[in-house]
Image (cartoon, chains in turn blue, purple):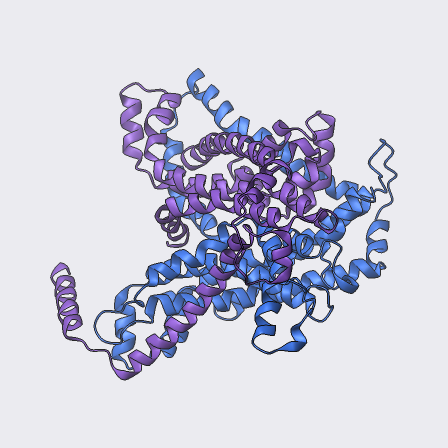
Length: 331
Length: 297
């Protein structure tokens, strides 16, 4: 996202020259622009942008969806939402996910990426571990598995009676794990769900960070080593500041994903878990709309979700900027 | 400059040949390898366990999570394919993802090309509209989307699903290809035009073939994203005979409480995973290369 923005700004010079070169409009050119720009844009506007805008309007009606009667109720839906205890629980759960998921995933991915890229010998050229390629290929596996299947597989592994986890735990002598319902106990349900999502995404971000670290010139690492920096020091003082932009992007993506999390949460615990401990906003929205038919209220939830998502992204950008940003480090 | 570089490489190789790992190197390598090995096991064991369980009978699955199947029940796959309906869901998914992928690649490439190489009024607006599609949660759109499709009669149909897939995959496709087209040299397009090619011909015969590597990367990511898509079909494609794989297997797992054939469930999971895993292993280099292309500046 950030990259694309930069691209446009830096590309404005090219655009300016293109403008000077522009000739008269011909049929070829007009038909070309109409089809090439018009067709995708129409589809995009009808099926993506217009639903976004409609949702904002519907959120101020008490529409039930099955007639054209849309009584305008102003902000009533929002008032209702913030007095709804279960919705507030779902907001809290979503925010919990948005706090823990990115930080756990990013740190784990960074550690693994560092081990793979600069974990090798301290003599000679900077290089990664032997067998790094193998770990890289394996790590990416979970990312290509459909989220639904990840949910189903882990639901079976965490199954209290015949799941793999309890089987392993009891066989090494932890008897209290026998028949323990990881997803059915309010104390562990959220933690187990977070683990599953992290499992699904660490590999992807690991690959992303490996690529970023490989983009750092070897001379930088060599200079650090000559100056006497050890591996930990190199990772903390060289690697992390230099791939700061990538970390920020990863953090934002992972946060947006955490605020959705619909697939994982609904497959792992379709009803929102014990005592609603894993109910997230997306699940609540879905059932409000498609089970209860309260479309106006559901749209209001959608707007709240969108606002929280935007606030989250803004917060990450702000924190990154306040703590030094990337520009002064890389130059 | 070039002298310097070659010298550095030379000495580097020279030292490397003689270098012996210090004690601390060995410790670090040992610790790193064990951490990475733990992670690799954490990835592989659940998949291996699923594969093994897919050959067991339900009673074997219930009796012990570790035991190997007494006889390898390939019927589980037959049951998953026929009884659980995975076969027809598979067919639906291939149709929907196939069409959506082709359409979004063509439309996305066209739109990205125009954005990257032409100037027109409203250029910025288009750009920010695309950005909005990437930032806002799909959930905000899901209710109105349901009624838009209902009004044009495409609700619960495969064409409806295809067009929505196309629309939601478009912003990512456009952004990725935008930077790709931007980087292609202008001279070649100019040469084509001097030789008398119109805009249409320039695009299809000159620019598009040059963009092949970029198109391949985006196509792989789109394939994975669309194949794994769950929310959109669950909301707007609720007729059982039109189910795609992800929602089909979720529905099957959802009724497991009543009709218990766990072997078939594991087999169904394997059937869903294998195509994407094969795709990944075949295109692995391409995919990892494109991740780096997307992040390096």
